[in-house]
Length: 340
Image 1: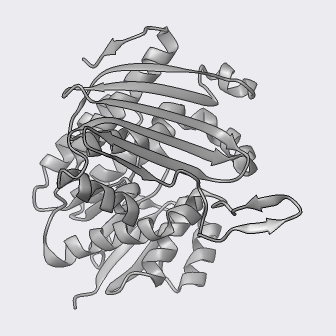
Image 2: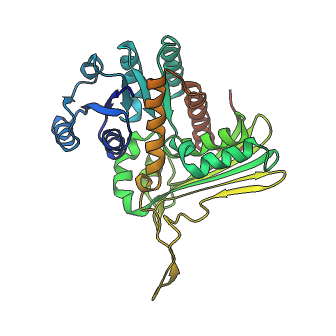
Image 3: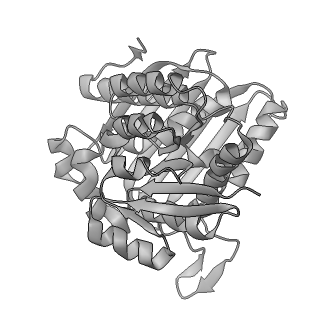
């Protein structure tokens, strides 16, 4: 089996997760290079994971002829320019969400990918790789619940991480782009349709910083799809029990529910506090297997010279455009805002 050599850029929480998975979890794959603007951090992680090539300059890493592909796990505003640099150096690209921080960036990324038809591009919407979500999609496609009428998706981050979340807020692109893109992607995926109209709602109920940023700490959006199905999404930053993501797909002949309680296993604890279950403490714990699966899929595409049939650059544009329309609706107070 051909060993696929990957260079990974960005060593924040998720960047480190991907680097560790590439180095230790994915057969036939070598994490051959690490890049981060913090050279000391890059060296530390490289030593820990046994990575021989360490960079603080992204383009220098991309010029390494040993590398087959690049994993981009940097701040969102860097994604599109790094996609272009990597592909211009002949590298296959995995890019974390969102594709870009505005719609024009996403359109620019489309042109870059189109200019390199021989190269693989995969976007990081990892929920599609979670076994429960993949099984739900299979049942939807098989018609087990009839025609999808409504998709309800909640994403709640733990209160325990709010300090880091607040530091990131000015650079996040806002609640709809930073958090809700996963939910928007699921609505598109399960309905098989594109977003037509949106209504974005919410407020800064607790943290004044979000109000200063014209953003929300609790946000809701209603999406009308072009096949008339409806999506309802909710996001907040302060779930007390831990990380909770739940999804319900309602069809004309049945309903599918995934993780209606964010328990990390089937264990029920009975003590002086009553009966309760332990939650996933953060998104890295909840989606670990999905992160491994999506990177396994990416490296397999490189090895087998195949391309993803979904999770394309165009999905990234469609989701980001919908997220920005939600943000615009939220800011303007319009009840319904057509996607232009």
